[in-house]
Length: 615
Ligand code: MN
Image 1 (cartoon, rainbow, N blue to C red):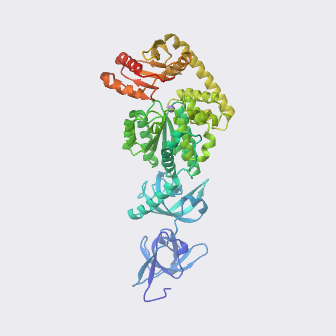
Image 2 (image 1 turned 30 degrees about the vertical axis):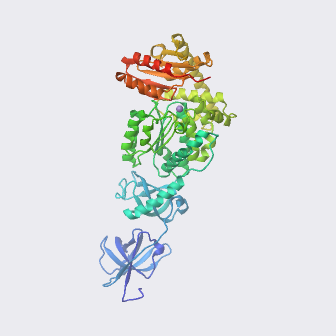
């Protein structure tokens, strides 16, 4: 009983209190919860319940009405015996249970225990049973289940992005722990701000990548280090906050290599940081882009999926990563679409960048920003970023930059260092084969990522015999088709010498090459160019493969600037609808069919004005 009968104190337990905070002999304010044959159940707070035996009741009880009770006994099994008390005069005293909140990262050690967590709701998914809340704090991601009725949304007042305090019991479901929610409180602005700030600081600290040297020595990479670290940090943060990642990449060997390196790292990190068994499928998606930039067709598709997942599964809008793509003016319309839906965009690319894209980007790694060039390919950048995202991935992906380098015909010193690094397992010839096999496979995969097939080709699936077989088969087929294409094309090459001394090779690939087959026009022109370069050993060579409304450019030994030529042609030929770009010396130009001759004639004039590289 109360020690002072003249000043009767009735305690009020906050929701954070548990049975261990209840003291026998004290009076508490409760709420009538329901009835049994032998008495009345009373809630002392949202998760503590006791029983007034019918012999200890003094009044007629009504559901959800307040009631004052005395705790007469707490049994060993946790059951609480109550007696009803009727008081005319008393004072209320709230009990703050300063229960330490449990961190999600520690949840696995609390199975069977009742816990309090403070976290952000990253996702809300309604199942045919409970409502599943995906929770995020600074230490991890876990699920919590709320249930009122099968298929009905529990705690409808809570929304994605809210900061909440949840109490509940930690259960083991399959291999996963999960909180069965007793109470969920959306924190007030003031409380939420404080929790959010704490969460933010801790997340940033956790997302900070390790400090490790690059795989090779490279001054350009060193100068890119701060931005490379920034991208790694942003990606790690997205993983830790259950934000989906959508990776878009150029559909060639370099682009695929770059994207797969990141894929391996992100999936490794998701699995290591407590995601669901299949959350890598929901939280990471890799998609090739057919065009050498982020097309409207791509972004519309991406937005379609993202908004559906957002509406149906309560997922956050994704972060967009663009690799081997994304640094030119042509990407801007899509970036504006993405921004309308609040999707942050990150680019790592080695195409000559237009400054104007940077206003749409959270981060942008590009060797041209630090006096480097396309010789540091996207696959090299992607691999170094991947190592910072999830260091254990390194041993699986060490060979990827070498394949990317030969795939994109890099002549930078970095290419040779990456090759040197893995020469015992993957010599240059093998790297070339893998790159060709990827190009050939991707031609048929079109918009699909070919997830497992590409992993096989990159020897990532621990079945080297099958990888080797697949690679050999694809290389054999690809070479047969390339040889056939070259046999057909070569008699139609128009050869001339420009005033600056460069050899000019032109071919109409629309009428003098096989169409809709491998190799496509870009690669066909590239193959012709490579063979001609061998023929004119040491000489400067420009190869133009053109169709009705496009020209593919390959060059060697000429100090060209394709993006600049494209801008000039666009200004000088207003009715030609010229656009395009690419690297300084390799690229493509599009225009309207009726202006092809004007574009070709003017382009050739411009090429003839560039100086040759000194031998
Ligand atoms: Mn590339």
